[in-house]
Length: 480
Image (cartoon, rainbow, N blue to C red; front, side):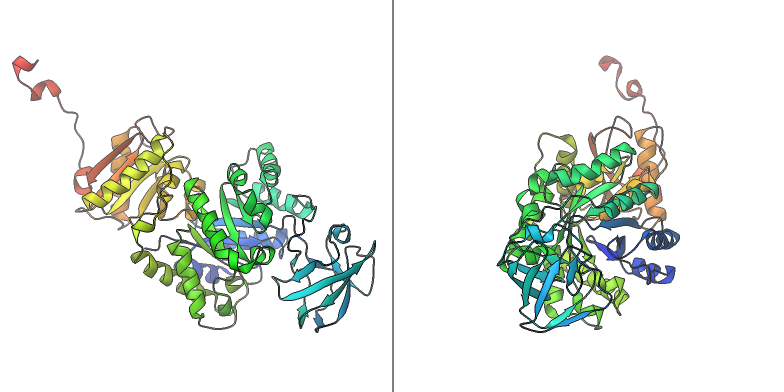
């Protein structure tokens, strides 16, 4: 029972249902589509194939965001140390390296470093004019088309949304995608700009903020005021800020997300070796383990599953490492979310305490919006949380929440019937047995209410028909 969720990136040319089914059976919970490398037709192909495999797999579409990439390259460019290269955002120029932002030259000062393809190639800006940056290559390598261009310490004045981003936001709305992961989020306005479009269409699509630069790190509190969750995208983040700071920055971001009860995804090069090789390095295995130890909700695979030779094996390994680490976690290292005088987080905290003390097999909750289940997920408990959802969309949204195992249930007229139906379905699904004990978190005010009660139930007893007791038949005449 893996509690940490797995997000797998799928490309349109490697997205047949058999492959997706194998990924799902080995532990994938969410499929990511990267709009930087696909068009609408490609996204539709992936989406349809995923939905043909299971209605429990959530879909996440990744927008490009305000980023700079190499552009207009018909073939790869091999470079060596000392080569001189002109760089421009003017696509009409020839005999130079193009980037996709016309104002790039104006924003970048002399002395800056241009890091291409997650830092694989470094160019140093020696001089500039109105059209070109005149750079010198500092290491050998190959520059490819549509690869990231980072400028550490330089704020590029890009709009928060490109035309392609807006198009894919509408694609997500039209096709009822669960999540939009927006790249290079710098501040709350980047999230608000997307939310405005969603609100105009009354769309419930949830926004994941990808933190990839120093601005995003500095403004994480205001970003969390507006984002559903966070993705720690270490590829660009590790270029924008010094590498030695990445672990502490990542832990800070994880802590902030847990305290705000937001799902957090650890991403980038988790098993990069397995793109080409059948086995990971020891460092990669430790990287996965640390993500679990640090209480991430999910881990993401990119090229490993999108184009790698060993995508299924990578997912299987990630699942096995997560399961092993989860069995050996020390609760003394848990980050305890604040209660803030709210009933749902208070009951979530008490539910785990009661479950540990009473030896309960699971925590069960029913949910209309998913909020109760997300509060429980924030405590990163060892005990599974079975969330009975009234909406398929909410069921898929919870595919991103730690330790939550969501499934559908039909609304019932009262609390007792809801609990009985939930227990019955979990027994039928072989998640629970008659002799198990569970902790139930629910609402006395109908399916729209906040969590308001906690009940400890023996499954066998909970499945029995409940009778209305005659109170006056149980007490003596004098008591009446």
